[in-house]
Amino acid sequence: MPELPEVETIRQRLEPRLVGRRFERVEIADPRLTRPEPPEAVAAALTGERVVSLGRRGKYLVFGFESGRHLLVHLRMTGNLQHPAEGGFEADPYRRAVVRLDDGSDVAYRDVRRFGTWTLLEPNELDEYLTARRLGGEPLERGFTTRKLAAVLANRRAPVKAALLDQRAAAGIGNIYADEALWRARIHPLRSAGSLSGEEVAALRKGIRQALEMGIARQGATLRDYRDPEGRRGRMQDEFRVYGRTGEPCHRCGTPIERIRAGGRGTWYCPACQPLDGP
Image (tube, rainbow, N blue to C red):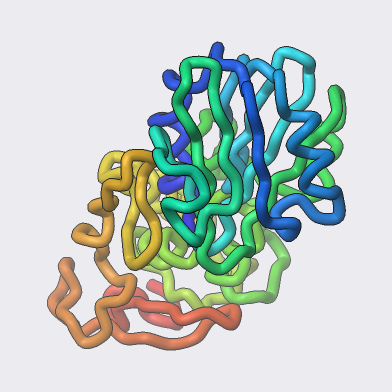
């Protein structure tokens, strides 16, 4: 599933190409993409809109339009945006939408498993919508402080890995970067979130930022479906410290990496560097 670094990579690639461009024609072939709204209605509303901004909130791409509307694109598991795309729907059976820009190029939305969503919001609806999704702070912004992270984790009995996946702790973190951050912080993924000391929360905040920054620098992680808009694979998978490395030596101490389940998800950690009973 694309996480913050993958979504941010797509945003960075598309922003200079799309800002200032007008949607000349919009075709949405999959009714699941816009439900409960009919795809024809969303396509008609988007036609003629001019892009004035392309932002990101957590795992959402946020298209801002001249009219004040916003389109939120959530890629879910296998969604991706391609530009320039050629050949229309016939070029790829997994294309779910195609947008013709006023420079003659096409942006295609591709989604193998069809879990992604396009949500069109009217002016002034964006903040309310994102608040309802209970998104936490942006972990790469200055406002993401140790104090704020500690407040979110305080008194929580759930495993810290599950707390990180909740999105209230830090928007945009998923399974990969949660494991990578916990390894950097030397925190066992099954530790109760509320049991972390102040020093451990500070280390976790730092680990989150380091893992995400490396993910962006490596243009995301390609395990199967993820590609940037030009179709290129990310390189973060070559930098994993624990994720998916069962039995391989820890980069820090050499102990074999182990796999468990935490928060219902496959989880990787170093049993020596990340002891369950803490430091």
